[in-house]
Picture 1 (cartoon, helix red, strand yellow):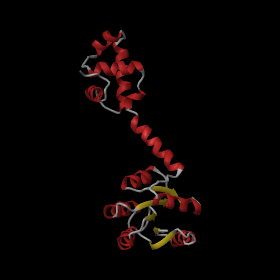
Picture 2: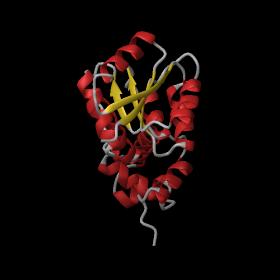
Picture 3: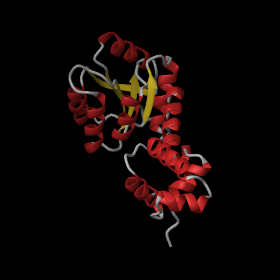
Picture 4: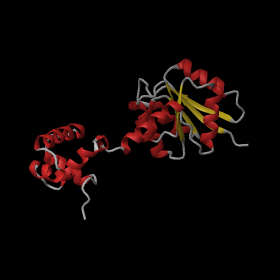
Length: 213
């Protein structure tokens, strides 16, 4: 039976050696090398062509994100599993975008890491639940447009702005006072994070608030 060839990258020697000692007991896994920096990790992968790389994120010489990106540029079949203490947005999303296959935290047990390696070899990613939650929240945020926070009346006013109406025309169209229109316009600009009604008109047309023929 073909063994899963694994490289371990971490700049903390005790962590690196600890992971290696865990993995060495697994008959299905073969440790092909270790590295303590991103730069050395790239050289190691070029030399050994592992199936899976366990990659730390923050190291003194080259980040795991940069190393992951470079490794996958010449070895796209390699599966990089991030193992780190960090799961904030500044680390998670750049790592995923760089091509990381799985994302684990260092609080994972030895059996969980071994499971992630075995799944990676089969083409099955593993994402730490805390990381998965962040990813889902980010996707939900990206899907929501800024005007989702507008009230129904504010949306009516924004639509009128997008159609080029003045405050007086909006007042007559919606049967509300001009002062009320101005209040709605001010709220709309604040919620959309824009500075004037020209930008509001552009926004309304670009984002489907105004149904153009």
